[in-house]
Image: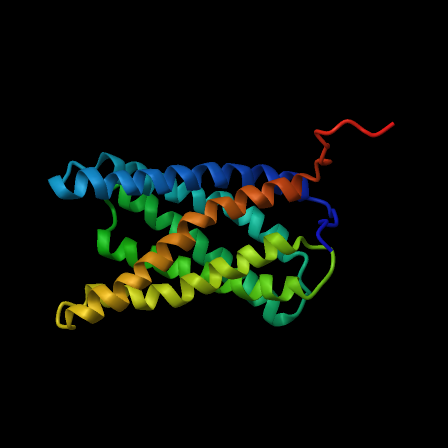
Length: 215
């Protein structure tokens, strides 16, 4: 079944999902600009600061969306624990971004917290959408994309970390590690689209045909 069954709170969550999609696009663009323009010049990191601030707001915006989607899962002690774990990790990721912007947190520490939050979110995306694929009343396109993003990030992040191991042979760093970076970046870029798609489904707006009705 591809139609999302409406439950209370969907339309409010849709607004947060739409905001998250826009913030995600800004995050992707500013991170790309930082590495293309500012990193080669060793600063100043204006795009980097914008990216950090955007990331903080993005993580706050996605919490209502995650909670609303999670309401469609079967309620078990494990499911409830996973829900609050992903909320806590996402909140920590948001706080670390704001503290980095305020220069109250070291870059490496903030990056570690942010990556940790991404891992927890990726686990939730993979497991939650795998479960939702088996149930009715949830769009298959949304579930498949969410599962793909979560799975890709969980595979890519450990591989991408190999690129930072200076003692490793070049073929490991830039072959395996480089492949991890490409896969992870692709999944990360697709994340805003998932939130955009979620906003469309959660808003429950009727799809109007562009073709005139046959008479």
